[in-house]
Length: 193
Image (cartoon, one colour):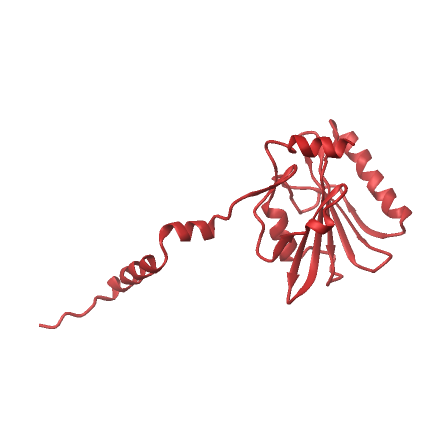
């Protein structure tokens, strides 16, 4: 008597074959990328993003996204958050950012207190969108207020003039967290000088 495979047993056989080719340790490593620490931030770098050591001097950490061999997004994280114990202090700092853009003659077209973009685990962040005068790139500044501190995330879209963030930037922002340990001691000393 010839045995036939029952249709319900085929998925089980496929699963066994899959597991023999890809051990569980490799599968979990691929689906659970290791979190990296960048000063005051923790991040699982999404696909296409990389840390740019050459542009990460001074007060910013710089990350770039490339597609088809071209940089299409640059994100700069301000290394040190600004102490803002109250929401009033936070709002004063946001106004300073606005005036800095105004002085550089970068055209601000949106100034939103509670944007739909969350960052650093917060549901909403302050948002300023603008066009850079020098090269007409689209810029976004997200400023979440976390535990009495204002963090600044500068996002530059090198491709599109859309007034909304594209999925690549949203993936980066969604993966970004505040480092629970804070900035490493040597970094705090270097930034204080």
